[in-house]
Length: 170
Image (cartoon, rainbow, N blue to C red):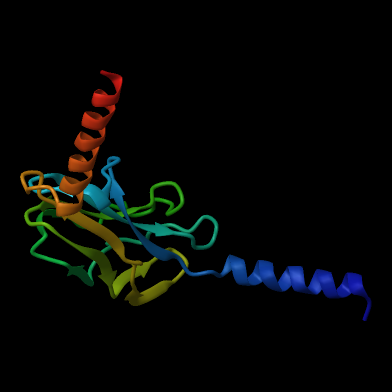
C-alpha cells in the first residue's frame, strides 16, 4: 500500500465521519451582555442553539424539552422562556435558534447555566434526548455594595502618594 492510497483512505474516512456528525447544543448570552459582570436588577437573554449536523439538515418539527440546570440560583430569576424557536423545515445552519431564556439578576453570586437531556430531531434522523450544552458561567455583583478592603487600601495609598508628591513640589 503506497502513501497516496493511505492519505486518500484517511481523507475519505474523515469526510464520512464529518458528514454524519451529530449536532451539538451551545448556550450563549444574547445582546452583548457580559455575563461575568452582571449587576443586580439587570435583565438579559440566554439562547441555546444547535450547531453542526450534516449539510442541508433541517428541523423536523417541535424542538426543546429536557431540563435547564441553573447552578448558582438565587443569583438569577428566569422571567420568560420561548420554546422551539426553530421553525419546521428551517436549516439548522441558517436559523440555529433552539430556544431562549429571559433572566433577571436578583442576587449577587456566581454560577453557571446549562441544558440537560434536550431532544433533537431532523429530516435525516431522530437524535434522541440526550443532548446537553456546555456550562455558561455568570457572576452577579451588587452595585450598591461597599468597596472591598483591598480597594480601600489602594485608594489610601494613592492619596498618601499624592500628598507626598505635593509636599516635594512645594
